Length: 457
Length: 102
Ligand code: FES
Image 1 (spheres, each protein chain N blue to C red):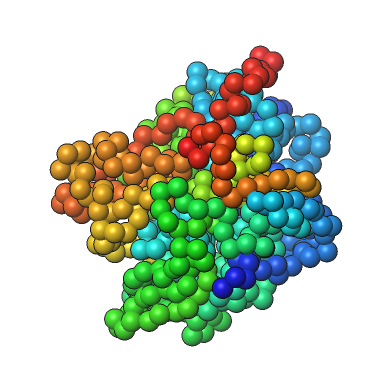
Image 2: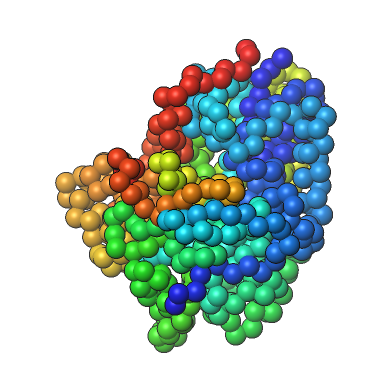
């Protein structure tokens, strides 16, 4: 039987697994989470008591359906699930994974449903304790029932900014401000196109926003995070749309500018990349079904940033493409493709409504830390450019921006803006950081102690 | 400013789990991650290696690697994605374990 490996058990990975299981293939699903669901539909550990309605609000039905479906597939033996397991490397049709033990999993076809992380723009002071990503604040609330501070400021832009604000307030967290860097005129223009593509979703966003009242500010410029080295964040300094300065006292600041596709494994699997001017990042080259290379398929936010509903569609489509490529009967794709196209129109409009703050990043002061892993500043990066030239991989080698433990996940987009602005180039000309294995840091002991288990061929 | 960083908002009816951090006995709840349990008593997990500031995690999804802390046995663990287990003995610095800060 064809051995299919799916990486990621979020909405895309679950739907892909479902379609393949329905065709009689028994895919292996490797996921870093303890329980399937991904980030958006992340489940708390066993023993927690809140209902899906409490955790996922209007999306509770979708979450229940996905979780129930996947648990059933695993219980029936139709899917082999490896939770709490990271894929570290992919080579010659073998995935090297690390969970409780190290294993090698040979596969014939690979579906990557690796999702996304928050897209971060550095703000002076963001290296301090008490600065988190927006996604982190949501994970803390959903999966642990905690707030990451007592006086919380949310800053950045995108749908999560408003959604998270509502979720924190409903849970009783101390929210003191919601600072949106998107100017109101972009939000109006993009918002109309969003409403045209998905009226219900767009309206839900508008009504949530209205309920935030005067906590919410649009068109904000973030100046710096004031912090004490021992105690962490103390205040956020910002200017409103009219240019007036504010200082908001807080002990936590969560930042995020929509999402960044997680493409590390796709790179290791040999995928090609194109610069996407709308998402303003490098995305994997693939067809609408998710075919990205020989025996390689992508689905979900790691492919195109279409959100959870789009990810379910993309997961199904990738599995259908895989079945067709094997010459097996497959469900029809037409309706799914049409809905996916609507999600793509919505996503493009959203990118216009909630833009990445390119100019602010390019103009960051020299003493701003760009690489949080190793404390490398914008000034250090700029100073290496005369020697390294504008190519991002060479600038990384000399400045170490992108070389830390996160492997550039949180600094490379900002780094490219700074390089491009300094050298007077368009951002894609700075190039893309090539991914290196391991995709996650792995303890050397895992390699020294025991030989890996190898799955039966 | 010596209040712990995190606030529990829900899910408080879970059994206590004892662990230690830098020799101090602390208690978390079953189902807490190591990060959650520590930051309900402290303001940070560790110091940065390349700057003066304290660190308390950043992404909580295993992507940024900001949340490493040490175990007394010497190994490191990623606090945001490691469940708390009874009897864990954790350290916010490498101590004199050779090379543990690298
Ligand atoms: S906080 Fe980012 S990896 Fe743990």
